[in-house]
Image 1 (cartoon, rainbow, N blue to C red):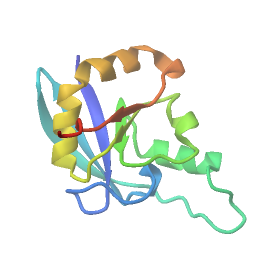
Image 2: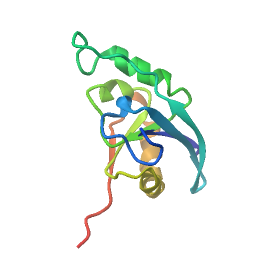
Image 3: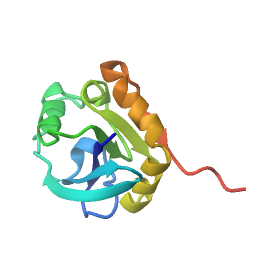
Image 4: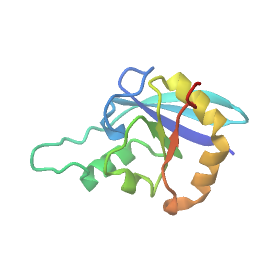
Length: 135
């Protein structure tokens, strides 16, 4: 199965420090047959938040989704309240690492779990990936 995965970033190498939808860019990779290929960097369509717009506004989820056409999985360090809306369209993966390169490895190690979630459709839950504790 081929999966197209977008990683949230401000610099192209590390995850952004805020919620997925607040990233400046999305690094897009295609995963298949135990390998990945970088496809492109997409600019995030910024949704302007002001004091009158509450956090988790549906318009913000819609704006983020518009930049993610053709994407199966979205991966970031944090997701906000809009994760419930994003889960209807994407497999949402919380990755407990700073580096996108490390996250790519975690995705490979857990690809079966991610494929299963994709097949669950809009009833899926988010996935949390992290390295096991050493010791």
